[in-house]
Amino acid sequence: MSVQCPLACRGAMTHSSIMVDVGKWPIFTLLSPQEIASIRKACVFGTSANEAIYITHNDEVFVFGLNCSNCLGTGDNQSTILPRKLEALCGKKISSLSYGSGPHVLLCTEDGEVYAWGHNGYSQLGNGTTNQGITPLQVCTNLLIKKVVEVACGSHHSMALSLDGDLYAWGYNNCGQVGSGSTANQPTPRRVSNCLQGKIVVGIACGQTSSMAVVNNGEVYGWGYNGNGQLGLGNNGNQLTPCRVAALHSVCVLQIACGYAHTLALTDEGLLYAWGANTYGQLGTGNKSNQLSPVQIMMEKERVVEIAACHSAHTSAAKTQSGQVYMWGQCRGQSVAVPHLTHFTCTDDVFACFATPAVMWRLLSVEHEDFLTVAESLKKEFDSPETSDLKFRVDGKYIHVHKAVLKIRCEHFRTMFQSYWNEDMKEVIEIDQFSYPVYRAFLEYLYTDSVDLPPEDAIGLLDLATSYCENRLKKLCQHIIKRGITVENAFSLLSAAVRYDAEVQIRFQFSEYADECQDRNCFRGLINVEDRATVCEEGSETSSLWNV
Image (cartoon, rainbow, N blue to C red; front, side, top):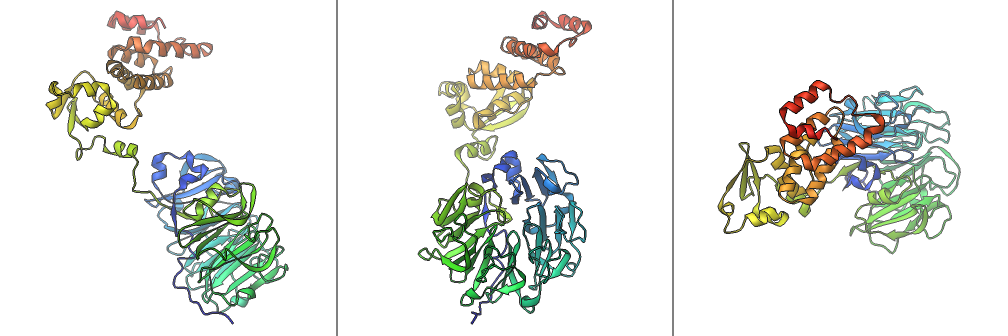
């Protein structure tokens, strides 16, 4: 007898209910801090976790990575380490996203539209062809009149769940994973019926070649490949249409999750069940024997509130009501047969740090913490009129600073702000020996430990660093100058050195650059006779620089 257990909301089934930091996934180290800060949602996918898609706070959509099978949707097959915008999806308000092993990508928007692209060898894009999708295209057949609220992908098949509880499937069907009653591939979305006829589906999940669904009374149905018992039916025979998991008749399931060939189910009482393949201990039973029927695990633990698995991995994770996160299965190559308590705060971190490949098991909402470190706070307050107690006036422009910070960071200012110095009593200090860009960069360096200047201005900052005895700053400037010297700007840099009276400090930079370029004759013909004559007329100081 089944337990009537209407689900109060779909929140337990959505793919973006928890906010985490994408920085834990290695691929996101390719992005700048500014790009990371712009991310609102993200997903890492691909056979080696080498592709990523993210949505910004402005609802723009970007992709980057290896681009296998055109899975980035950029219109070409070129890989990219620089984010590229998917104009077709910008402003679409993506709500659910999944991916296959080809890979192909499937998503739905808040308006209920479905888009797909990438690998399409088995019609998993649902457009009636087997041509690869090089850009995102809307999946229209049988879905235009439906508002889709969730999508899921297996290795090469796709599923979409509508707001009214109808389930559609298409793509690869060699084991019956589309649920059509045959093993013929399904080129367009087809409603999954049979045992689901008249049922309201509220949650879906896909293994590699299997499919699972939860209906609104807590019943669980499975179909497709069952060689490892991943359908939980007590046997290992494939199923071409949905079959109810009878062993769960006495419980009400809220959430279902599928790994490569295993399945997890979470009940309304916080009980956790597992079944299917167990080669890596992914069932958490303490052994490596496959289970053809659901087995309760973590019985001695507190109430479980979330479960996680991904069709491309053999890893499992769960979170308890007190926030404890457990992991088991294949973890960085090791087999963990018993749920292991981690230091993580969410199940997503398990997949970032221990799954192979390190993909995301759902579309993530990204949390940017309000907390700032000391260094971040200092950087934020530089040139802030609200908190400053001193202003420098350079070239008619003001720079707002804090005396305490300057005294802590610079011996020059520590000496200046003594009671017997006039500057200690001033609210505005005039600076006339350095330009505004140079002096601002110097003050900002005191707050951030970094310098962002073109080589021409770095020469002026080098002169300032020498005057103020800032040795580390001198090295930073020398590095900027050396890296910035080119055939095109060498003359202007030399002229700038004279203008800033920095000839002595900069001479070695040009000497080193000339040595590096000697084999390539980079300086040959750089300055013609007329240029040399002009320089010599402007001053003998400059002519001595040409000795390099």
